[in-house]
Image (tube, rainbow, N blue to C red; front, side):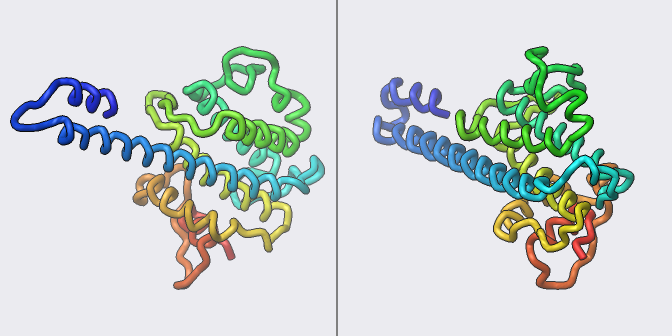
Length: 243
């Protein structure tokens, strides 16, 4: 919109308009840019908070616990940690390189472009996926701290997303998997923080707008009593029983 406004302002007056009238387009462009910046900052904040929560739940995970069952059907804790690590890799790749490869080449760097071997991958990661997850989360937090929100589009297969949308989607996934990790390690008193969950709920509803959109990633929504806390509602929406 900024380029359009600039063209309008330098074209003189038309149809009784004047420079002040055209200036309104410039103001609208400025407001749109400010709104976009605010949305990106908020998405970055939610992603940071989700990462912080998941890092806390993953802290006590050791290789001896990796065979434990999780709320994710057919996944033990080791498989869940490996999946969470892959999710962080995809987020890092999208935010730093503007694209996410659905099938990264083995041994690639965090960006998936054939760079140096990624210390969060390989034999050590297979033996201790929790350590790999913690390292990947720290690296992703570093991207936001160093570079701030990214506004360029991110290509995920054939579906273009904004970096803001990618960060919001990642925040939901990382927060919910943080709860899965906590539950698998017996930490039943470690809910998704209520302020974070309350802000992620509308994002999750957008991701799963109807029953047909659930399969195969999510189970049926779990019914809760009225007045359930935001963390329980977030989990129930995504097919988990918070009880």
